[in-house]
Image 1 (cartoon, rainbow, N blue to C red):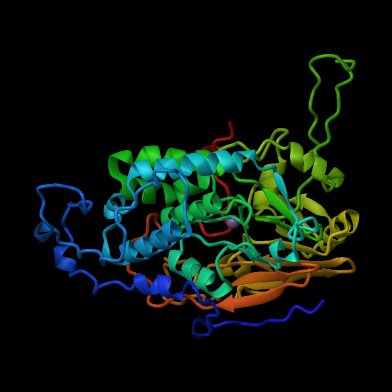
Image 2 (image 1 turned 135 degrees about the vertical axis):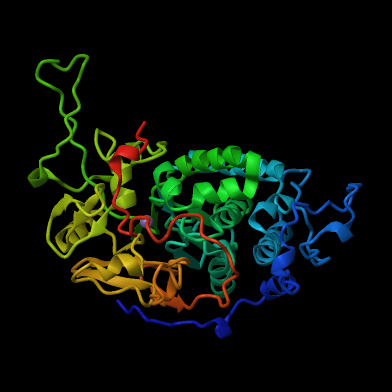
Length: 475
Ligand SMILES: [Mn+2]
């Protein structure tokens, strides 16, 4: 398999129609830092608010921005609406204080968007079957020629905006699959997630959003997203945060592209052995026996994956519903076999033999997972670093295992001066087979707008993300 590495640079942006959108977002000069104590919000054009524009201390938005955002009267989003959302978020992230975000995205607009998106996402199966080639379409023109796979984003809005400009936006002939971890650590997790939801609502069959381990109550309470939302939405913050958690529960866990490529945030998952207890004699009180004997761990089937209960705030690390935790938290290993992931405290380690078994059994060619950034990879003997935004971890007879990470210059906030300076990457899969990955690495957008972290990045546990099991919600 030729995994050609066609690195693309910011100057090499191939996107055409969307370039002017970002031009719209070119902000006025940043506000003087001494004048940023205003609590005013921008009145809408129709507002007769007594606060005249002269009393606003933050800069006025460019006239071409349609701001604040409003929900379309017919409830149907348009491409223009999304372009305006992008431009508004880009501008507000550079010019407003965090708590001024409701003047751009009012709570009622957020509510309308997340309601429709959550309904849509909850209806999707645990494992999506994405079949880009539609032989029954009237003309071949409708067939999707490109699938773009994206790894962790972690609230780095401006890098995501670059990725879209570089790869092209979701379109009739281009499907995006995101492997999760939209929020936490970065300062714009909410804007990032809202933008992706807007695309989902606009083109539900051209963008798929999988769940990452950070789309959970536990992670968002430790790594910043909860505080970010409370800071940005004030007394409505708890409401907005709860809506996000409800939406996270609906995110599907995995995807299979064209019957050849499996993608998930963490990776593979175990079989859950369900054995009736002898006493029950097959009647009621059947006891579920989860096989915790390490020597008996075996790979799960897609049928088991399809039956897992994913609507949990935090995937459990014990009990019978272990598959969501495996899919979201597991890591590959160079040691053969399946074993409990002792670094994380949840999920599995799986060896190259498991990659081969999984690929061969399901006639797949590739596994594309995410979940490990440059900091995590620094401590993993035998694995390559995340300098280019991706690594090829297992090469076996039936195919390959790839780790894909899409947050360049990660993490946004770092206690040490020495940064990883990693690139981010996305993968392009092309018709007709969709199993020869083309890697596109990209550097971080500079300068990144100034922002404060929403978590204690100096003392908070490192990105191994070892679970504090006692504080997890497992109900
Ligand atoms: Mn992760």
